Image 1: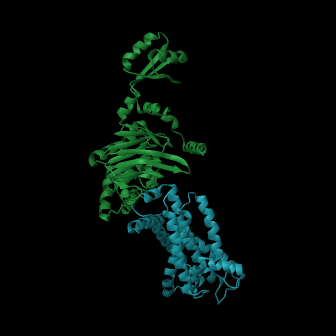
Image 2: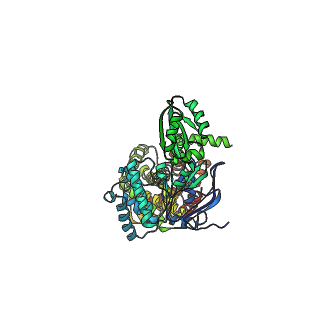
Image 3: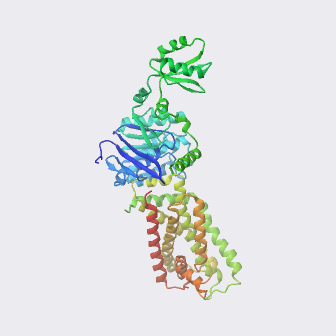
Length: 330
Length: 249
């Protein structure tokens, strides 16, 4: 099979086992140059493992991948030179200053001293940290550290930027700042961005999204087309008798009704015209109706049968879940 | 394979950190004070060291060796620290070979050990050991090779380890016996065969012996043999450490 490739990233059948547990199971996709491509999925879905393989930190158990035309297994140095990475957990030396962190980064990416000095000033300015350049990183806030990491990841002018949960644990304001930088970079430099996230709002920024669950891609398209898959509008109804109406609405309109604590949920075409008919059909029994456009949450629910939010658990829970899964497989 | 930028980066970082965290320097001052003043003075009446040396003079090279072994192993611990707190990822994903990372680490460990060892050397006049220019010229290569080998041991232990507790256990299991069986606190002669055997296979024995030769002109093995053994051991242990450290996941 000859892939190599057009495009910034090409992955074919990428697979990784950990002690018999299949973390990533035959993932295939391509990312075009200048594209923002997102991996959306719950914790433990295999997002980080995939990124680690693409960044040459982890050897695939099977399958192959090319980044900027270089094979991640046989040409790791070329891959590394051409990419920037912002890890999920901070990877700065917090006993050093912002400037020192950047300077050391420049050294191991083989930038000459003069270039390092110029780039340090440039990237610090870009992330609004120029006045903190001589401060120790340990005194930085979470948002400042993340911005510094983005600055560092861009210092050697990579063609592809990998971001693993780039705004995890940041407040909404910082999150939107970081997205401003990323979108500007794409526009100014044609940077390709590959990111993983479990924030739906973040996934909306992507040109295309792959929804990943249990190590497999289960949907891949633009956010708009994914949402079209859901089919029409989402109606939520609160009633006096959810159980009876769940059955009656399902039968009358031929829709699948889902019932939870918030009420009854179902999809219809042209929801605005549907609501008056619904209220007339069940006089006095409907207490409240809510209509909304489908979101990526609904897409995730549709393709996996679960809500992504339920999956966001503490890391301890994740470990337990992974241990359970491993136990079941053996 | 060997990448000068990578080595320089690791080395520079460890030195910046060292000079910023001055508390480490305290160890290189308090340790000799404790050993020379307390142990050396307390044991002096009991021990009669050979060749007209006082007991404090006799153990002085051993105290230098102790400073080197503590600093070297300690500096390798930072690999575990970096793995835990993420910085190691930044280094491992950079376009430099892991060999350079390991060599950089061995060099920075050796450099820091030599700085600390030099501070310990300042105590020489206090115990009546004369520091001639010739002695210093001989000490520098001996201290370097010994520190390099000891850091190699530390890297080897830290290469695959993820917890501080594990490292502590192994390094204590190794450091204390190595030190006691090195001829640092008693002469490596006239002992039962099993003890002699352990002392003879311990690389630190030859390090202490070489230090003692340089400082006191007193030796139990020829200097050329000491140095030969140390260089060979340093090369072997660094080689194994590099292999362990570079094996892909």
